[in-house]
Image 1 (tube, rainbow, N blue to C red):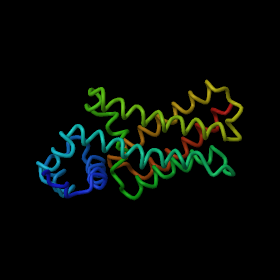
Image 2: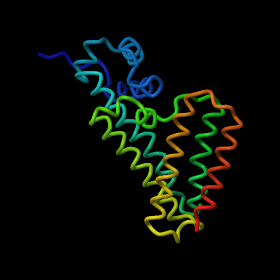
Image 3: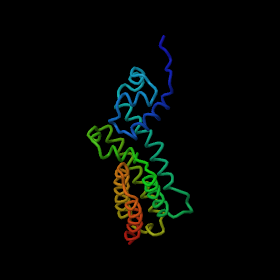
Image 4: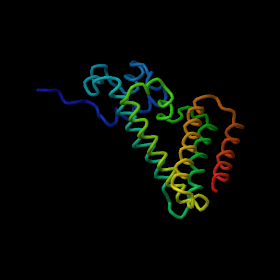
Length: 196
């Protein structure tokens, strides 16, 4: 008779997500095992290998973090979509200013060697498309941008996603606060000049 699993899989994936968020796929097995409170045998029995655990952690990040961000971009309906986009970027700069160096797990992976793996790349790309679509939807609910053509809104959403990814990757470095202040103003200027 098989022994019952002595740990909660969901909690283990949550812990792994935070470890990978901080260290990336390069997190060592001792760091993972210690942070998850598991033995090597338990980890391999539950997840088969490190890559499988990483994929589960990426999917968890997409569900918990990316979709929550997209929900904030989607509402409340009484606020202007542009204001919601600016709030998203303000949150990025707030994280930078309080020295939160984690950045965005998907953005960090998007810039790393892990993207050579088709399964990892597919999960990252799916998450970034979800975020891009959330930005585009918010633009459609912006008094300044709602009249743009679908193509133009998609182009602007792509541009904003590019800025978001760059900022989240840069947030892993020691950015001076002046760069944060300038960056937020530049996003606001970008939204203003791309409305026509």
